[in-house]
Length: 316
Image 1 (cartoon, one colour):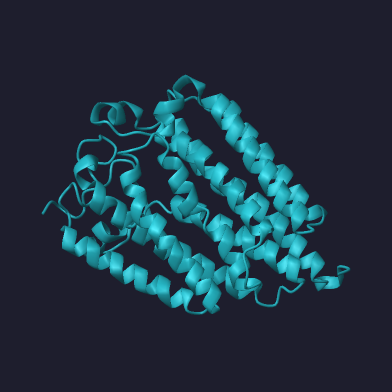
Image 2 (tube, rainbow, N blue to C red):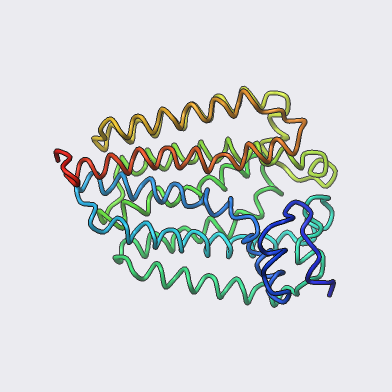
């Protein structure tokens, strides 16, 4: 085993490196608690759907609790997913400059230890899931199939980002399952829009590794699009905005939600204009900014839900 205090190349100067006990650092790094952006991106569709479904129900009484439970669930399940990804990719990660210092390829923990931590986080996620109705529980469990197959997709298809989109957008269905006990056309439109968003932002992320990926035969939309990435992003981000807009129409959303969507769209347009695929550091910064894009949309949906519920004097 290597020194557990050795830092991961693309995640330095964070609270795990400076404050966490030495014995815990490999586990926290394995689950990306030193880099919570992925958890935030997994959380955003959950919060979108929770707010939109609450607006449709005209009832926000349970929304604060649902928001907190989704927050916990997103962080632990993203951690479990990263552990699974690193277990399956440990040999590939050892051949990529950016990832070879991760806990498994660096030898900081064993596969058995990583799997045990995966199970622990999954159990916490199950406890969160059991707070919901049976339809929501079964909907949540169904997502595990996609999570399980995702790490293998980069070996067989140029479109692994689509499978990631299916997994990371699942929360767009969960809010409806939890609040309304159903998945309808509104939920499916929101889900589809989120998938298009994920394909866009993960293409930006994948541009950090295109040279190494080409050497070891890993496929991605970043390699597929190459110099056409800006045009591809314009297509997928536009599709995301349109499909989420369809969800707002179907869900009867009011003006605050549309302002949120407009701010979301403006942020995505800024990303495309700012992006330079030859600059890995910039790609990472723009990728991370998608949390802010998601929060802008959530703020609009939350205000819409409060307005439709007639809270704080708003007309219902």
